[in-house]
Amino acid sequence: MDILLPVLLSVLAGLAGGIILMLLISKAGLNKDKIKAEKLLQEATVKAENTVKQAVLDGKTQTHELKIAAEKEIKERKQEITEMENKLLRREDNLNFRDDALTQKEQQIDLKNNQLTKKMSELDEKEKLLQEKIDIQIVELERVAAMSTTEAKKELFEIVEKRMENEVVAYIKEKEEEAKSIADDKARNIVALAIQKMSQDEAVDRTVSVVALPSEEMKGRIIGREGRNIKSIEQATGVDLIIDDTPETITISCFDPVRREIARIALETLIRDGRIQPGRIEEVVNKVRNEIENNIQKVGEDTIFKLGIGKMSRDIVHLVGRLKYRYSYGQNALQHSMEVAKLAGSMAAELGLNQTLARRAGLLHDIGKALDTETEGSHVELGYKFCKKHGENDIVLNAIQSHHGEVEPKSIIAVLVQAADTLSAARPGARYEAMQNYINRLEELEKITKSFEGVDTSYAIQAGRELRVIVHPDKVDDLSCAKIARGIRERIENELTYPGQIKVTVIRELRTSELAK
Image 1: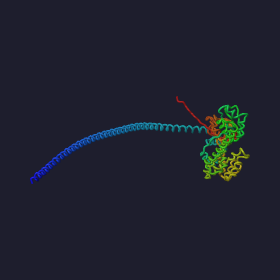
Image 2: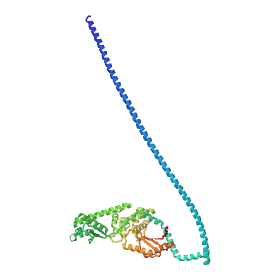
Image 3: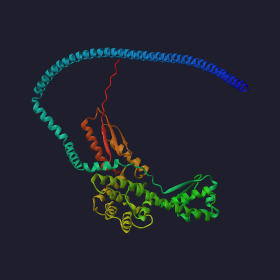
Image 4: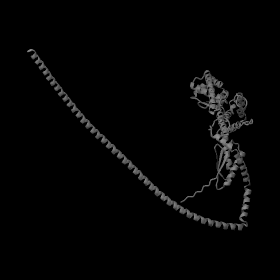
């Protein structure tokens, strides 16, 4: 018992000490948490104050920026309003100026109206006075002539009628021709529309080609030892090489344009290559001949495609390509055939006919010219036989036969081809004419015009297709101008030979001038 009591007291003391210790420890922890909480509260308070200060600062900054932007906008608006006010002021000034100008013009117009009214009244008075004087003169003339005005007019008309009898006959004849021409207006319009739809190129006739040499030494190399090189070229191509005193040139002469073109290209190739000897010459000529043949075929195919005339025999296409190297009176045969095709097609379209067939007939009408240098016979006969052999349409065959009038045309398309062929051949610049003959004709035209009385000067223009005659206005009146024009026309028709038509224009101009000092 004595032992248990101290033990129990010890235990109780220990428990009390433990409790006290726990209470002390717990109080110390609470103090620590309180200090930590106070610290956190202080930090939060500082952060909140900083945030508020930053927000206030940002607000002030935005307010300042908005204020600046508002002031800028207000300034811009004020500037715009100022500019608009200035514009309105300028417009008002302009309107005031125009109003003043209109007022001045109205005053001037009123002044001129008054002046005109005054002049009109003066003219009426003068006219009345003049008429009175004329009546007095007529009465006096009737008294002196012992005839009335009616009798004088009748006698004057009889004299004029006798003098103008020839003029009246010519006038009637001209009116008859004019009536006939009116009946052909539709056809002329069709031809004009067809010509208007196509362009025309001039061609130059050539029977020789010239090849430029880099040096005179090359002539000797082309001739070769004892002339073997030049003989080889002539034998391989069928042309004549003319080597004369002309420096650095060689002339190729041949009636066949295809052979001449082959020789020209082959010779230029040999000159560039430098190896000129018989074996090489034959090799180059054969190569160029093949290239030309291929080019001829391609030209024919391109022509058929451009004209849109459909499928055609390969042999005929080849002949079409050969027309590129054929010339007639200086006019390229292929260009001429294409012109005829386009003209015939355009006229057929105006008449509601088959355009494709008309263009086909126009293209093939001179196809025989690609054969007439190799075969006997006219190009009409050769072209007809060749196209018939290759199964061409009967209308096309008839157009080929009839385009020179040797056979009667059996269709309207054949007539159109004939007309188109004439138009293409007769247009200015289409065919070559000797220069001297051309000059002589122009001189003769001007000589005929100057032989008429009252003619001052004359000019033959548009390659002699038009004559412009200027007369003295004090020597020739308006009626005499028509008489001179007809006289010149008749002399040209009777004395000259010329292609197409010649237009004669007589010009009478009177100019009066005074010098105010």
